[in-house]
Image (cartoon, rainbow, N blue to C red; front, top):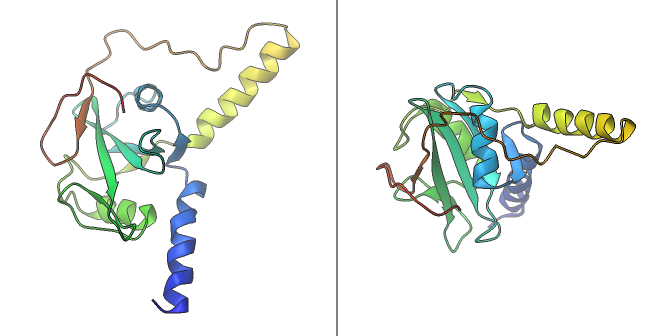
Length: 165
């Protein structure tokens, strides 16, 4: 691999961390809570880093008023793909691709679920609870009533999982 290609690959592999759709290392349940907080709008999405295996990613996508999860697997060369889907050098390229083509997803990626809205809320709640000497509720796991089920996909076909990712 030429030096220019190596540099582009290294930059591309880090750029996702600054994107509004990248929520970092959060649980599957937290990703669902965040997407549900906006009403599971068709095509809204976020990407999170998974705990196991370390360094892997999952795409949470709202479709038909539910949240579906797609796992990005990494091949030996470090290229990412949703099972039996096209391979990408980095998450930026994958998100760009799936914003233009469904290509195995249930719908196009349309609107990113902006991580900054949750980070600002956490900072604000933390400051308020400290100034009022209240418990910190920023890690609440309360879910909205009547929460639709979520589905997980590693291919284009639904696969309901009972365990978290």
